Length: 184
Image (cartoon, rainbow, N blue to C red; front, side):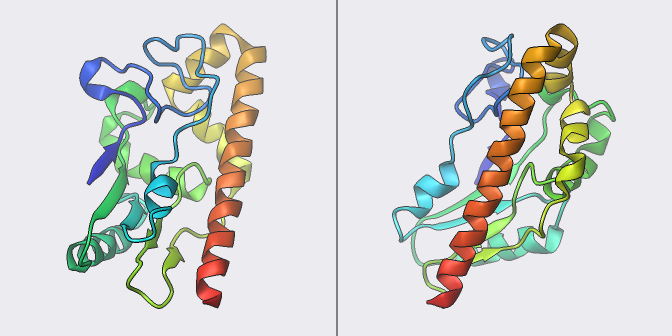
């Protein structure tokens, strides 16, 4: 189980390969220019690893199902959990982390899915089609993004548009993956 905080939380919020485009973190004070590493796709590419991406605040039942399937799978399993942390600077406060997780899935920032090599339909996209209209508002609700907007609005606009385009492309990729595996 990997708790994806999108920064190195235990080292004071340093930028990592998991930090998304445009986020501010230690050693990326001007906003990270490159996209986030796709650990789930890397693991799925092996073909024999159970992989799930979950957001408990968005869908508790999907989270429990993924954990149950991973435990039952007779091979290596990886569950990647969206885990907002203090370094996100959630404007609503950390007491609303579950709400932030739900919002992340609704706007397409995060996608819930399961890849089970032992199942007939290997890939299941559990997230509904995102409401991308609220994507920028989601980013604006976190200080790690909002502070770049205040410091350098032009750069923020460019990086946030790139971040949103990456999220759209990721959803399209996952949709195609689901279509591919449901046809087999």
